[in-house]
View 1 (cartoon, rainbow, N blue to C red):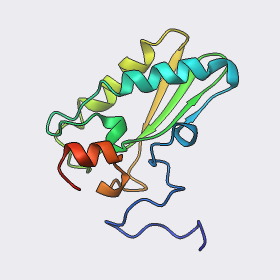
View 2 (tube, rainbow, N blue to C red; view 1 turned 120 degrees about the vertical axis):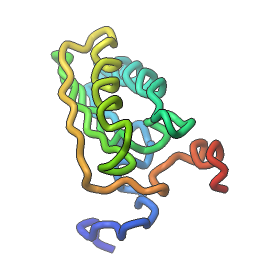
View 3 (cartoon, helix red, strand yellow; view 1 turned 90 degrees about the horizontal axis):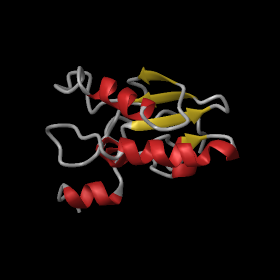
View 4 (cartoon, helix red, strand yellow; view 1 turned 90 degrees about the vertical axis):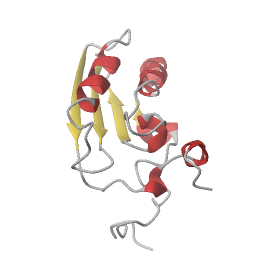
Length: 133
């Protein structure tokens, strides 16, 4: 199966999708910045969509966190839909939380819609919390 084939809308994320919640797949950092990556993820787990009782990391909304040696951080994320009522609140909160981590010098947040989020991108813990098992 080719990894160039986009997932069908509503299909669960393939293991190679960025939102598979595998820390190694989501956080890209030099060895010297791994602890900064850990701290950023812990901060992202404190950000909640006001309508869903699960943090944005477990929801699978964080696609990539890339950390450079100089402390520059690039975060690629999505929302549950382009019409998400929290669209004005969540990206600035994510940026602020990441910027507050010691060792982070700057944050560039990229809000993307491709691949589109789907419930298959949530962690098992998130699905359990939402009664989806």
